[in-house]
Amino acid sequence: MRLELGKIFIKDVQFGESTKVENGTLYVNKQELIDIAMEDDRIINATIELARSGESVRIAPVKDVIEPRVKVEGEGNIFPGVISKVKTVGSGRTHALVGANIVTAGKIVGFQEGIIDMSGPGAEYTPFSKTYNVCVVVEPKEGIETHAYEEAARLAGLKIGAYVGNAGKDVEPDEVVVYETKPLLEQVAQYPNLPKVGYIHMLQSQGLLHDTYYYGVDAKEIVPTFMYPTEIMDGAIVSGNCVAPCDKVTTFHHLNNPVIEDLYKRHGKDLNFIGVILTNENVFLADKERSSDMVGKFVEFLGLDGVLITEEGYGNPDTDLMMNCKKATKAGAKVVLITDEFPGRDGKSQSLADATHEASALVSCGNGNIIVELPPMKKVIGTLDYVETMIGGYEGSLRPDGSIEAEIQIIIASTIANGYNKLTARNY
Image (cartoon, rainbow, N blue to C red; front, side, top):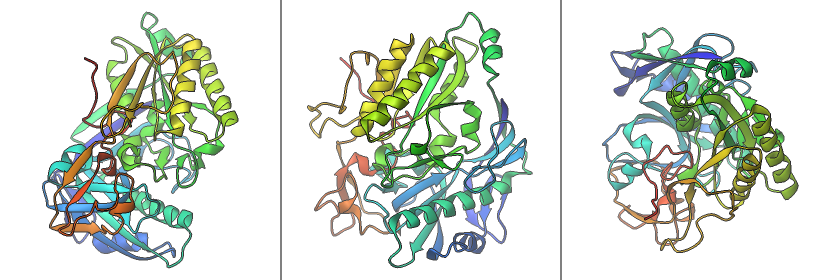
């Protein structure tokens, strides 16, 4: 598949009479976006607010972040199987409003939702403090079941993301990047002397609001499969989970997966990027065995010399991570793991809940247990009512003046386990 990604760089966001992009500024019509959210009768109220980098603004509880994108040429539409018809995507041309995001927020769904600070020390730990955010704050119908509320909020964000993305359809991009992965035999033959490298992409799929969707299918219902990397850039995978904020893979992170980006940058230079092995994270041992067996089989079948593996979440998924590592190694590949760590606030406990002898190379995305002090902000988008029950928060976290003391895992994407962050750890 060959995808042209046209990047339209957004330098500001403002309310306007129509939703459009003009001279690097994204204008959004507030009422149009409210109307989209209110199409779902599970939502009784929606407000739209803007948050810019450097402002004294705190957004909470954050549910998802979506970069607006639109298909310009090629088959399918953005977010297939979810808000558009099921059709394989990943080819043709797509435009992205880079620097702008749709952020969904509102009353908490599950306790594992987090915070974005647009300034101050907390802003240094999340990429979304540097973007121009259109915040969609939704209020659910009284007494609604949590899964229904999560779905309503998720769909509102995706629909608004697609609507705003459409504003870039006829805009000339500032930059066009071409990504291409050929069918297997052609891809191997193109660079026969370079090591064949794949990416094992683990999706959060433990249920109980720990869900991710592949072409609209709950990932816990799938068996491992193979993907062209460009499919992911067109929204074939969307977030639907309430995992720990620090390593929550938002829809933005699927669209902008840093492992895929970096492998493409080295493709044809010092490695041959074959593609993505997609798998899930399971609760029961039999399911873990089944999926990891199939992952190992893919590695062997594709003849991969090396693989990178990322996970989402921690604890139970660490076992899936280690099983995938063990079986990919047995299939003949050299393996590097990318994950974050939870060794306690003093850093002295075991960083991962599981381990295996084959896990000899690991890139750390930081320690989610360290304590941060977040000063009060002049404006709160959403509510701080749930800070003390969020992952990373505890009794006394929210102080009377609006400041917060909490573990860093309360911040969205602070230690995200695919490397889209600034933290790491080193051996000395």
